[in-house]
Length: 312
Length: 313
Image 1: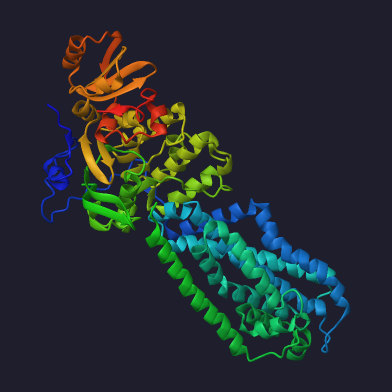
Image 2: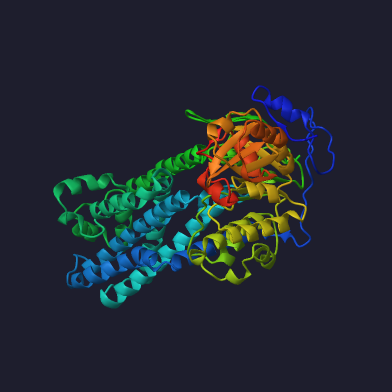
């Protein structure tokens, strides 16, 4: 009389196996290894979606516009380093170092490095943690989209925002802080700041996947402000307390700064400005490479842990 | 077979979320997974999607691992609580998801199917709850999937928003697509699904057409006013469940004639007697031993507001 069935707790699987489906075409019973895969059933209006480059372009476009529509984010990440430099840079254009380099010229890459570290921490770290917390990443993961699309979108967007920050900083520096450099120095500073900043990107990814979403912003501030301060991005290291100066060479961001200053002025000027003699270039490079590898591994571990832990 | 689950269990620490689920879904079916909160519906869907690995048992989606590309590119999904980046516009988010899949429907068609044409250039942050659910639905169908999972899609929607939402789902199912949704709104399962799978405490406890499920458990609701102790009615052998509701005694039973004979024979004076078909909610309460109702389900079906407080026979 009734085709419904209540499955007793004793034999759930026996009951399930006994019932044919109530609707649809009668497929052969799925006994044994025979697997019947229903054919793809595209709608008449369906069309191919455009491939991986279209995907990456769209991902970047979405990342960019969603950042540009949040003025707080742009101000925090792009405008603050430029504004801080505009306040502290010009008064220091009065002094110059032994080879004639202005102190304001040395301060400019410091604030650039500060801006890029904050970009890496906030655009990667805090952003990812938030999107993870809201379940957006989980929904993305249920689609066939490859993982690189998400990271690629973030990376390209961060590069664009970083370039924007640096260009604004350079313009301000040239206009009001009397920074005059030959073109190749401008380019070298730009390139080293950008590459060095991206080598610190795994710091952000690690934060994004390991921090609790609500704590990410606080942790981000706790990490990047002391790092920037202790690496001499705001004030020359020789004006910092002794213990910070002793600690600085063990921070990846310190070596980031050393690499940028190295291409800004002569070694003598760098030493005069920072108060610490420049070490060998390979030490600084090794520090950034090591940071990239170590935190890259941590980020991958955090990403995997996150995936295997999801349980809601 | 679109989905096959065999003896799937999932344990999170001390919590047995799934305790051995067997489920087959065939192409073109519209299946409701019905159960109270915490029954394991969401976990079951996460396993079918390959987002969560089962502790034991087997799950196949389109003949293989649900996490592989071939399956993912044929599946669309609405999860619970997926925050869309709120500073994107509707057309941008949908455009993004269109490119996540190898095949896609035209943007205009997606927006039309999700009733979002007018919201096309609105920021996600300005959408109402119902519009946001429709956006998630748009994301779910962006890849022209053969199978759509909807995990409690109408939670927190008002009655009219739910009705229009299900119209859109039915429109998509009419293309020959397979739809599997979870709900604890019994009237939804009744109205939309061809087949209902009742899940409780990580098991499938019943399965069949909405009509069959109803018939299986309790045909009839008998409602009357009388000066009689509820316990006395509940103790009668014909009674599956008895509750007092706004001064009436409401009884679910398979044997209304025998019950009424007994009541008259016992000399219970009935007033305002009404006998009607039981709704699916009554069936559900019975199947889950009266523990299945949530406050949300009450508003859904309107009636039996006293169900959880009532005496269960």
